[in-house]
Image (tube, rainbow, N blue to C red; front, side):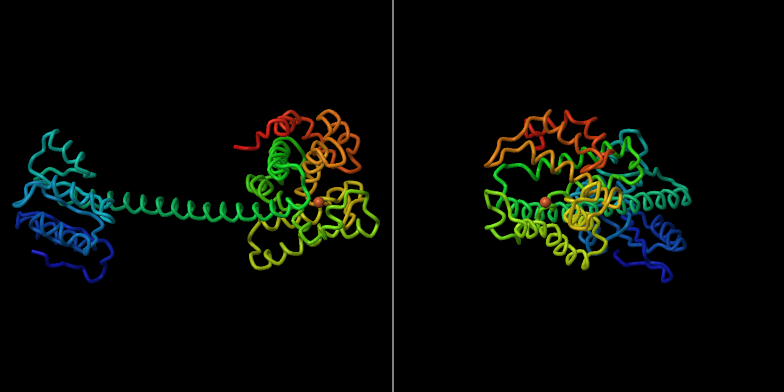
Length: 364
Ligand SMILES: [Fe+2]
C-alpha cells in the first residue's frame, strides 16, 4: 500500500507509517489526519525504504515486526541515507522488554511505543518529536549560517590584511609590524574595556573590529611616490605634506567601499584609523588637527600602538629603542601626543607589549 492520505487543509507535516497490521493503519491515519498531518502508509519495510526519499517524511512510525525485514533493519538502513538520517523514528511494537527498547534506540530510534497504545499518547509523542526535530533543524541552520558568515568575514579580513601587508612591504624594513600592531590594539582595547572611562564604548565587536582594522592604518602609503616614501634623509616641507596625505588617501579609498557597504563596521573603523592615527591629543596632529576626545577612540589607541612599535623597531638609520626607553618616551608625551587614559592602560599591560615585541608571540 502506498496511497498518500492527505488532509487537504494542512499538509505541511508528513508522517510515514510502516505497519503491517491493517487494523492499526486506519486507526492511526484517521487520528493523524484529524490533527492536520499528511499520512504516508506502507505495509512493509522494502516499499517504505524505496519511497522514503521521494516522500521526505517529517517523522516515521515504524513497526518492528514487518513481513520482509524487521523495523530495526529498516531504521538502520534509512539512517544511512543522506537527507533522511535526521528524520525521527518512533518504534511501535508489541514487544515491550527493556532489551527490545534498547535495541530500538541503538538502531537510531528516538522513542518506543508499546502496543497496545492509546492513540492520544502516540499523538503527543509525535508532536513532541516533531517539535524537537524542527528546533534542532533551526539550531543547525543557524549554526550553518553563522559558520558561513564567519568564513566569509575571515576570508575578507585575510584579503584585506594581505593588501595591507603588500603596501607595508614598500617601506617597512622590519617584519611583523602589522601583526604586532593588531595585537597591541586588541590588548589596549581589552584593558580599556575593563577599567577606564571608555569602558562603555568598548564592546566585544569594537575589540574584534580594531584588531582587524588596525592593519589598514597606513594603506594610503601605497599612493606615495618611492622618491618620498623611501627617501633616507629628512623630508622637505613639501615632501612631508605629500607624506601626510597617506591618511586622507587611505580613508578616501575605504570610504568608497563603505558607501557600498555602510553596515560594515570593520571598514568604518578602518576609515577612522587611517584618517586620524596621526592626530595628537593636544590638537597638533594631522590631517584635521582634532583635539582630545574629538579624535575617534580607535585612532587614539592606534597612535599608541603604532608609535610603540615604530620606536622599538630597527630602521636603516637607527637601532630600535629598548622597552624602558620607549615607555619613557610615550609617558613624556602623555597628554600632548597621547590620550592619558590610553597611556594609563599601556602602563598596566606594558609587559605584554614587551613580550610581543621580544618574542613575536602575536603568532598564534
Ligand atoms: Fe601613518
